[in-house]
Image (cartoon, rainbow, N blue to C red):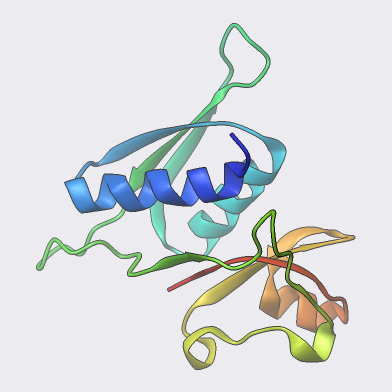
Length: 132
């Protein structure tokens, strides 16, 4: 697999389209941090990191749906920086997703965080994805 972050986003997108409540994704440090960010901002119901016999492990994510319409809470997951075309932005160039209603996940020298956190700390980085 050449792009594990894209695979992560695609698995979540496909599970939501199929109406699944739970999705399992192979774990990595960056995927774990992205999962924590999604949970902190209310895009997923809950998550669990399971260690398997191999060192990689699995992330189990319980997807969140609207109670009345049964529509997924995550409307769109978009990969911005790809292995073929990396997107690095400075502090002043960080994207605002839907005028602040969504989040962009940034990989910085201080770790993986949202664009709001990166802007407040005054650091830029690679724009991984946008979620709203």
